[in-house]
Image 1 (cartoon, helix red, strand yellow):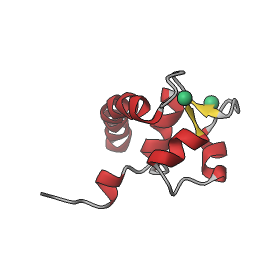
Image 2 (cartoon, protein in one colour):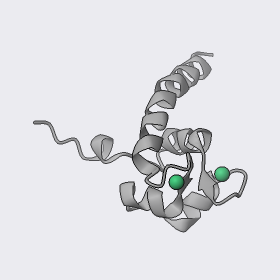
Image 3 (cartoon, protein in one colour):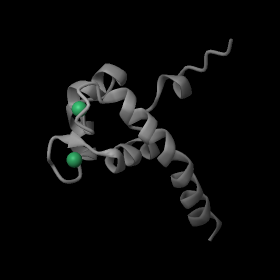
Image 4 (cartoon, protein in one colour):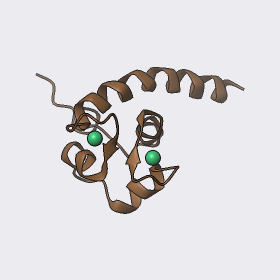
Length: 86
Ligand SMILES: [Ca+2]
Ligand SMILES: [Ca+2]
């Protein structure tokens, strides 16, 4: 099952940026990313997308929930979307 192994590898790679992203997103420093905080970094994030990622419905995303969002491409960083090489 090459696909599964690749997925696991991808999750490992993605998990670290998620923590870095959290530091960037979490402007009030409570360790969680609110919709408002996320929309500052991801302006295209809709409330529906946020609700979908908020697995435990506490209206914030923790690092795990953010990781899923990044894996799903819902939380696409601008760096990966518009590659601006300089
Ligand atoms: Ca926060
Ligand atoms: Ca949550």
